[in-house]
Image (cartoon, rainbow, N blue to C red; front, side, top):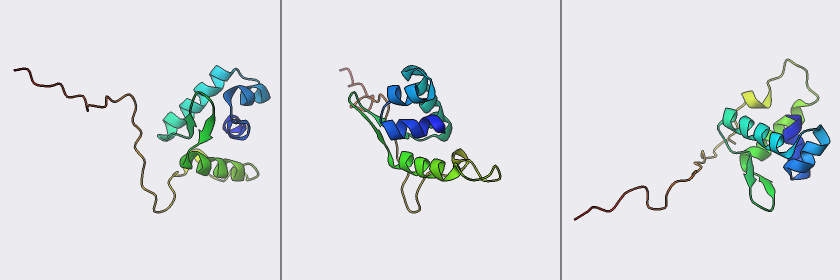
Length: 106
């Protein structure tokens, strides 16, 4: 959670890694593992910058709020990440634009 909050604050894996004593690669892998465990994308990555998704913003809010609470409170990972009334998002990963169908041979 601490690493995610640093990534959200600095806007980069390398900046967050410097603060928490991790390499940029291990910082990015840790965030990917969190996203995999939650089943949602928390950070939108581009070649120039990182940006929190709507789910990432919600996770950040919960993580910041959980910082001062006792151990009896649920961790942010245990809470659903959808806002009320929000539709679930589907993320495309490497799908071909044609839908994967091959033209029929004649």
